[in-house]
View 1 (spheres, rainbow, N blue to C red):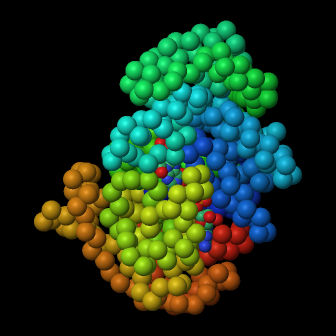
View 2 (cartoon, rainbow, N blue to C red):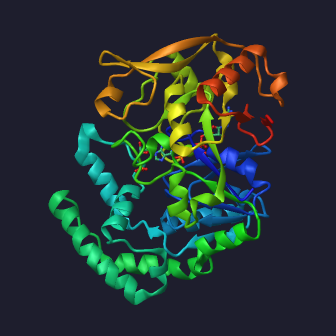
Amino acid sequence: MPASVVLGAQWGDEGKGKITDLFSESADLVVRYQGGNNAGHTIVVDGERFALSLIPSGVLYPNVTPVIGNGCVVDPRVLLEEMDALSARGIDPSRVRISGNAHLIMPYHRKLDAVMERYLGKQQIGTTKRGIGPAYMDKYSRFGIRVQDLFDPKIFRQKLDVAIKDKNKQLTKVYNQLPLDADEIAEEYLGYADRILDHVTDTSLLIWEALRDERQVLFEGAQGTLLDIDHGTYPFVTSSNPTAGGVSTGAGIGPKAIDRVVGVTKAYISRVGTGPFPTELHDEIGEQMVQIGGEYGVVTGRRRRCGWLDAVALRYAVRVNGLTDIALTKLDVLSHFETIKIAIAYDSLGERYTEFPRQQRVLYNCIPVYEEHEGWQVDITGVRSFAELPEAARRYVLRIEELAGVPITTISVGPGREATFHRP
Ligand code: GDP
Ligand code: IMO
Ligand code: MG
């Protein structure tokens, strides 16, 4: 098996960190291909909790080389803090490899992210305010500063001087903010160079060599399918491509290298920030999902909006990613409910939709068509095989599988590494 992908099939926070960690046991390289420290991936090992934002979830295994690909945006301060935090817990971050072509998140990106959101008022996206969108904007407008620029102070300063002129105009004239000081930024960022230099390499070549030598490469998506800039619920999305197509461009490998694409989906669904969400629950059940599922953002601490599993959206994720199989997480959270629902279609503006609608107006007016399933209402956190699950839980899993059209090969019943089983 050359390369596998683990990515989110919903609006993020599906449990990608946990599933990536599990699959990392047999991986040589674990590669992030998009996003930045807007991601918050949680791994729980022997009761110890790790929350990673930028460094791939494979880092906990000493055999793994964690790679931050060219498609990512890197806030160097956050990167170093995360490496230090890992070191302090006895995990060696010296193995982390970073693409010199990845773009830097600059202080003006963070500031612009915050003020642009304020400017949008009621239309705001509810971003993580980590500067992700503005950093990708600069990448595409070719104003970006890349990781490799840190090692050439003259070029860094030239690029910074061009960018800062434009950014300070925006900050002061459009958003009524104080300008930022280029000297201060240069001093801070060039000060990071020494510590980052040893980690920077041609990651595309590194991955290619691993594939050539038949070593295992695992790609870890951040965010999720419905937050994809092209395939998500635009404009309430992130600024990169978490979907499978993003792997090729974001890591610099050909699409034929990938032969497995695992979509991580919760047994229900959640979303942070604003934007359409057909199965959102505003009632006591939604509140219970938040409380029982611990649905608070890893990065921003925001309460996640929760609702029943949306099979229309899941089928869409299967299609746009070419999912080969599904990892189903947080099945244990549903143990508390007497009745469990799955949305199998939407009604909107007088029509029934069984495919995910691409028109914003249709999506906003969607009323889910639910089918109801009997709950199991017993604790399943100790279950370690499909056969051990209560019959109602097995039926629920099999129904999701049938609706998705691809097998559910991994089931997670608790946050810990051990609370998982595979289905052949
Ligand atoms: P990610 O961004 O996709 O990696 O997901 P997050 O880490 O943001 O959110 C998932 C949360 O659910 C974390 O707190 C995990 O520890 C937790 N989690 C993962 N799988 C399970 C599971 O099967 N059951 C329960 N109860 N919690 C889980
Ligand atoms: P992981 O990898 C859930 C959401 C934000 C906002 C939108 C745009 O942990 O699943 P951004 O800061 O990216 O410009 O914000 O995307 N968002 C996430 N939601 N999980 C994430 O990451 C997210 N990363 C961004 O809440 O709605
Ligand atoms: Mg998360």
